[in-house]
Length: 422
Ligand SMILES: Cc1cc2nc3c(=O)[nH]c(=O)nc-3n(C[C@H](O)[C@H](O)[C@H](O)COP(=O)(O)OP(=O)(O)OC[C@H]3O[C@@H](n4cnc5c(N)ncnc54)[C@H](O)[C@@H]3O)c2cc1C
Image 1 (cartoon, helix red, strand yellow):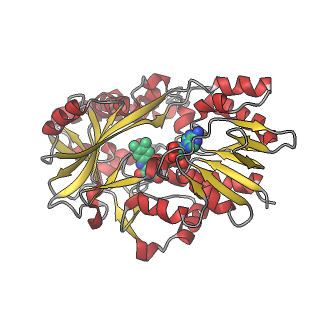
Image 2: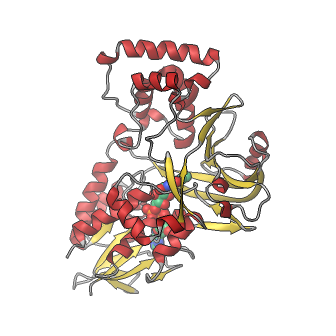
Image 3: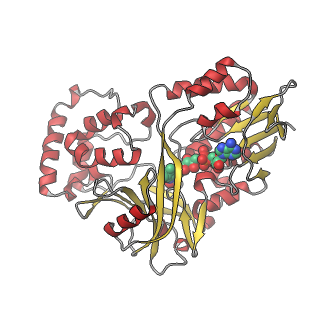
């Protein structure tokens, strides 16, 4: 059996190793002392802490769903929940997505928005649709009033970057494409959202995404606390990791693409150049405070206003009753962009709704990837140059794609089919 080594034990590494393990000898090398990457969770006084985000699962891809539900018993082990998201503005909770709930805004907020949307509707057929960047897209679709009130502040906060610098190709397929007629119609009949990716989602009855990690890792060979610092090619074409500490026929790299120029030690000028080209890609981190909060029925609360540094609250305690076993109330995660001081986050908790009490903190330096105009082409070129050496890239930070868990699984399936089908 040929040996495939996967670097990284997040959802990408676990998924592909599972897909390959019956036909290849597989091993996962993970630099941290625990597996799971961004989806691992901790228990704090009996309460489940998603250290990054809230990690709910769904997919529009039937093949991904089929694979996933082959690993789990959907009815016995998972809950299916409808999203109940709200936007917190001027002290009020407004429905999400905001364009379907304009009728909940104040009269003075609503008037200029309606004027602008009606004006847009009348010139709709001549409207430009090949927007150059995210900001143009948002203003073009929702108007500058709604952009200034919500879309601009919220997205600037979460991406922590100038939205004019965000190319639209990056977001293709990830954004709802609103239709103005529909927006007006939805507001008149007060239609609830329904067709967005996570408008309903699956969540493990116990242990959230940690349950996914535990199941997918079952039976796999995994070495933790193993930092891959060098990859070389030997004369017999085998790949050597950390000076022949491990040998492999193929490597699937699921770590951060920006680190790879230091790790790969292969004398290939074009490859070196391509690796250096992606060495400085920008990303954002997130700081999280895990809290106890008053009971409520929300799943997410978005915080667009600049009064708050935090950008959203994820009510993970409401995803499963087993998530707040150590609390008399319920639990949630308050999420901030970038690195924040704990003292500042504690101050912020006093301003937010729900009588929040901090239980734990986490900082994840890389959560959101930021692409530029050439990133996709640069990564594709790199993949092409790595392929003759049997090194493959997979996952959110290796492919520098805005992947959710289901997209990581989809990418693992595609890579398996393309490169490991024999
Ligand atoms: C705030 C937030 C909320 C999210 N919410 C959701 C959600 O609700 N639903 C959803 O589906 N998705 C969600 N996502 C996306 C999801 O987190 C990612 O798609 C997924 O976790 C990426 O997995 P990965 O395996 O590609 O990368 P990672 O999880 O980063 O795994 C990479 C692993 O590689 C290891 N590694 C790196 N370099 C080396 C090395 N040199 N040697 C050894 N090991 C190495 C790392 O330690 C890490 O464990 C969210 C993301 C964020 C940031």
